Image (cartoon, rainbow, N blue to C red; front, side, top):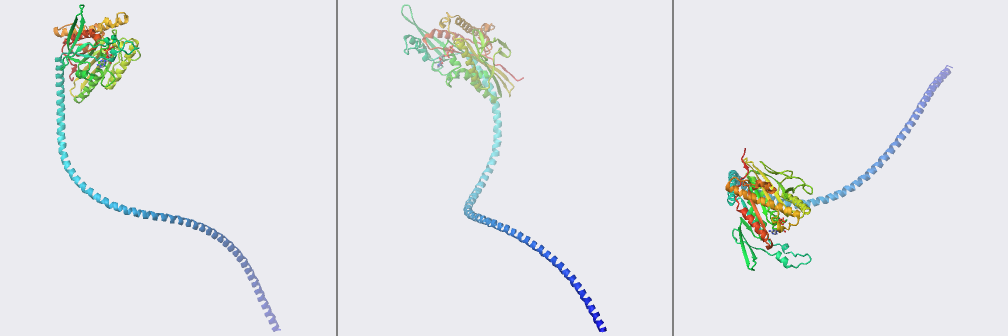
Length: 540
Ligand SMILES: Nc1ncnc2c1ncn2[C@@H]1O[C@H](COP(=O)(O)OP(=O)(O)OP(=O)(O)O)[C@@H](O)[C@H]1O
């Protein structure tokens, strides 16, 4: 029994061990089940991770494939670039070999030039040495020029004095005589309906017997007139006249001006100069004074003005500086009209005033003149005003005196001297006498002619009185007897230089007028009016 008990105890102990083992196995199984569940979770996670990785790898593979394509394209481009560059390189190689040939040639040239440069440098060194010698010589020459300029200034003063003395010896009132050529208009038919010359026309255009015997000095003019006596015999009279210069019909404006250019010089030197054109209507006064529009026919006014500007310019180097202004007046029926005025017709009353600074006319335009061109425009203004007046008042220009005045004042910056001169260029009204002007029946014309005659005879009286004064001393000079003489008082006195240009018609029909003019001019020519004085002041 014990054995049984032992056996049962053993069996019970086995049973307990087996139960324990079972319990352990169950717990183990539970653990394993748990492990299985977690392992399958793990597997699921790994599967998902794997799927994601596969997807990513696929995307990466796609992008790599794209990159590969792009790289293939780039490779193609690079290949073609490379091909081109190869071509370039081979071209450059060709150029380079060409350039190196040129380079060799250039090197040879450079060597030659360097040799030349060295030779030139040697020459330059020699020249530098010579140049410094020359600079010294130049400085010496410059000093000499300054000395010579000073001498020239002194000689200029001497020349002025001598020039003036020569003019004084020649007499202060000088007279030139100029005969104009016969014009086609002198021969024009009397009727405008026919071009044939009638005997009357031929007579009208017949030339007077005027000769010029002095072929050397051109100082004589001889006029012959023939008349038949009551008994039918022919009487010939010959009149001889002598002047400072006689100009034949062929003479040019240049020739006339050559003889008067010294007067333009004089007014720059500080003298009052007065040039008159005297003669009957149509004898060539305006042609002489104002002239035509061409270079050859330019008259004395523009030429004299040009000369004044030139003389002033020449004197610049001797220290003279000049200021010039101009006025242009007309005296008609003893009234003064400003030809440079504005508006159609000058209605102002102008008065002549004389004072220490010279002659002044009230209320007239005085234009500053900077160049000969400004004088041309001044003359144009004056002429257009005269044309207006002429149309308003019946060919008035030949019935009025025109007076162009150029005033010059100069100062010498070297010597401090100053001078004032004036140039009056006067185109006188026609000098014909009453009966030949056809004025007798016309009251206005009569008044005009009387006024012209009055002023011209006043001019003659003034010149005669100046002559007497120079000869006998004190004498009243009747300047106030006409506007013309009063206006020109300062330019007519013994202090100034006066020139009369007598203009003559060449026609036989005008012979009597020509003889009157020649006699008047002879009287003027024989007048000595004293010594011209220049208006010059020393430095203060
Ligand atoms: N030396 C000359 N050569 C050529 N033509 C001339 C000359 N002198 C005058 N004449 C001409 O003669 C004509 C009359 O001249 P101009 O008008 O100058 O005379 P004038 O004396 O001034 O007359 P007026 O008193 O009427 O003004 C004009 O046609 C002019 O061109």
